Picture 1 (cartoon, rainbow, N blue to C red):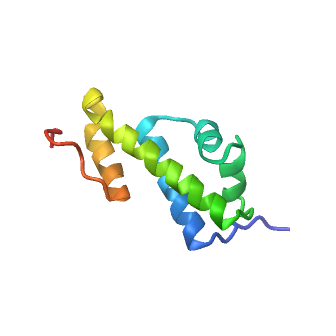
Picture 2: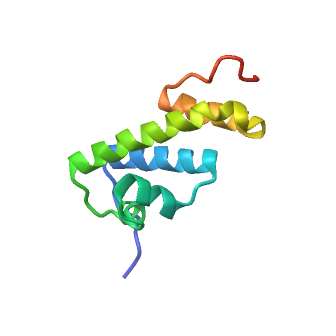
Length: 103
């Protein structure tokens, strides 16, 4: 028996990519983010393993992730060492960095 990577839907793959970008930007753990987005500490892990998720639950988690990203955007000026990396993540969300953010 060989282990193969699960085939993820494009929507789930995009969501997981956004989660990873957020985690890299903020330093939050997978468990923390999973708990805040899915009310389940292992939800993101199961998604990566190819488990199903209801569309409405994924939409709610995506909306929560957007809110968390916007909050991170508001904190950009407080974390100058992460500005450049955070700007790249914000661009992934279609958000502009705050005015006056260093280039």
